[in-house]
Length: 260
Image (cartoon, rainbow, N blue to C red; front, side, top):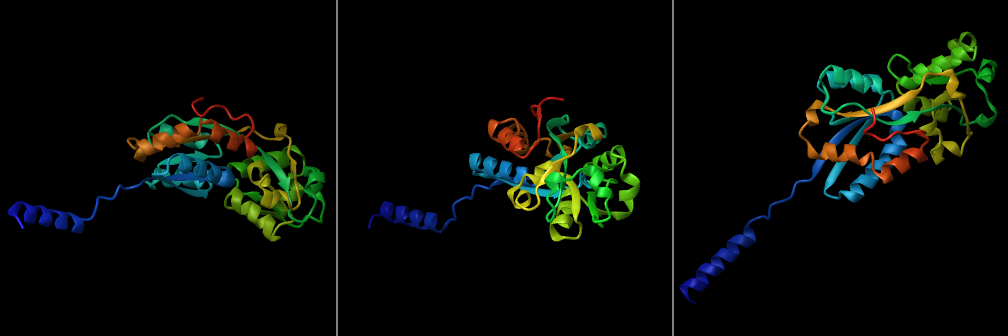
């Protein structure tokens, strides 16, 4: 065997033992209000299908608590809040890399896993048969604030207050009703329209004249200021696929994400 052939053979052997470089997947972490659980899961699925080399992790909870965590340096790249005032507060504190953008409007409904909630009104909650009524904690959950506003506007706050149980977020509030720990709850329309919940006791929309508009918004956090994947996901919220999902889950009147 010639010297050239032996050198070539040695090089090929060395290359065979050398691991090929692995293309690292890009990933981002999103903090999202609990009312987005079903809608955001679908949006992420659509996004990852369009961007197979990227991954998106979503953590769901209360908007107020996420705001505090971001202020304390929590590693979130985007923040989707049930009330745009939370992203606005972060922006004013210099903790965001984008201006707060609207993506939809939240609605509240009466929902029950055991009663036919379609026939219920807020006035019915004054009846003693509803021993426990679930709402989100108004101290840090926008849906809880709106539930209190609606109960007061309907004139039943005094009779209902002693029987309230509070979820840490709107997702836990729905779980209280689903598990039977509450006979009825005031939850997000975006959760009530999910087949797993809608097939049980149905839901009754609460007139939006009884509570302040629940404009939802998101921001890219300062942590992700130079992360192209965070920017790509933010732009995807404007895409027809994402907008169709938001409409399907009842975020009525959702303006484009770039509108302020």
